[in-house]
Length: 106
Image 1: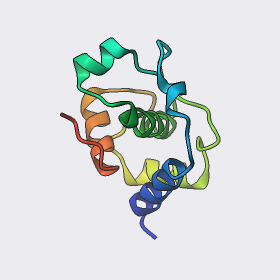
Image 2: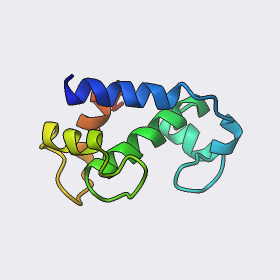
Image 3: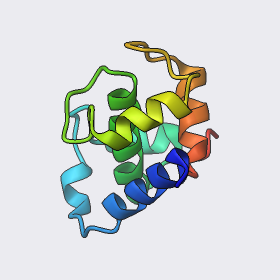
């Protein structure tokens, strides 16, 4: 199976787990404040997919150590997504990666 298809399935499976959206309200990096929600036009329901996608992106870029990092799927994704530079976060890379998972850039 194609690595990108497997990555999307992994992402969808992670998002299928129930979450308490209230835990995503706050000022930590993975949370959103009311002011941020207003400025960026985000709803609270937008945050869990963004956090999950960001964690996958950083693991593929070899920045974040997580359960996904260096898993067989992560290694496959690195090979299938050569535009993601090792140990680099860049807006263009993130936008392109997020789009693969169905996350719009604007």
